[in-house]
Amino acid sequence: METILVIGGTGNIGYPLIEELNNKGKVNIIAGARNVEKYKKKLAHFNRVEVRAFDFLDASTYESCLQDVDRLFFVRPPELSTPKDDMFPFLEKVQLLKVKQVVFISLIGVEKNPMTPHNKIEKKITALNLPYTFIRPSFFMQNLNTTHQQDIRENRDLFVPAGNSLTSFIDTRDIAAVAAVCLLEEKYIGQKIEITGAKAISYHQAADIMSDVLGVTISYSKPSLWKFRKVMLQRGMPKNFVNVMVMLYFITQLGNAKKVTQSVEQILNRAPISFAQYVEDNKKQFL
Image (cartoon, rainbow, N blue to C red; front, top):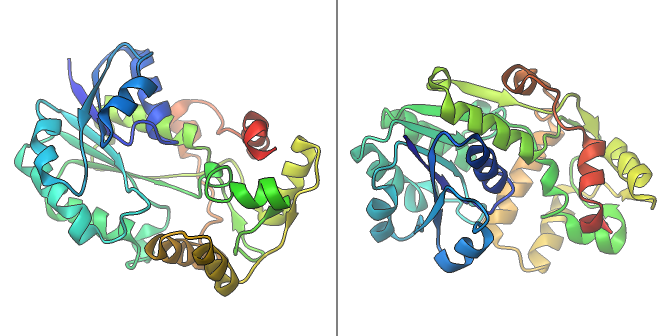
């Protein structure tokens, strides 16, 4: 039985991925974590999960965490924005240990954006000749109940600098489900898979849907990139993290987030989770 290492196993993608893999029962699962005891408590109800110490910034954790691992899944932690320093050493260790597959959650349109960390990570994985699967999702729906939750809960406002552009939002549960299939089926090695929701909507439309589902009025204030950056920095968010967000929303304003693909339906044999269903499922977090 193969062993899959999931880094970020309690995150919006990692947790439902572990759930998917655990339910399928075909593999052993390892969750890599900085805080092992905390992870053990959160994942204790899964019967096929081992937790090992792991930190991208601590090379001493690499080999022990990767021991006997066949396949690897990871997402770039938002706070790590300089891949050469904080991610490349780990990938070089992965190459040495001859892992069979690396599944990386990248970004749709990444090939057109050389300044993004995702682009640099993809290029490094390719340069190392690692057997890869790049999953390139559109914007996560879950960004709204994490990064943007404060403005929605406190101000009933989508404080997002996306202008009038369209975004083909995708639920992270769909990303996890696609990743599980890619980790279990050899045919996805070497593929770059763009995944999106079923349609692209504007943030005006997103606010309207949220208003209908939540039963309260949610507005879309459409801040400028400059105002958004200023407010986020004032709130104490790390500068590098804010700069990456601003870059991604600038790309969105250019129209690069509106692409719609059928990849989710083709891989999962079902329609993607709708934006309205996502809001319904996260009502408590928004209210």
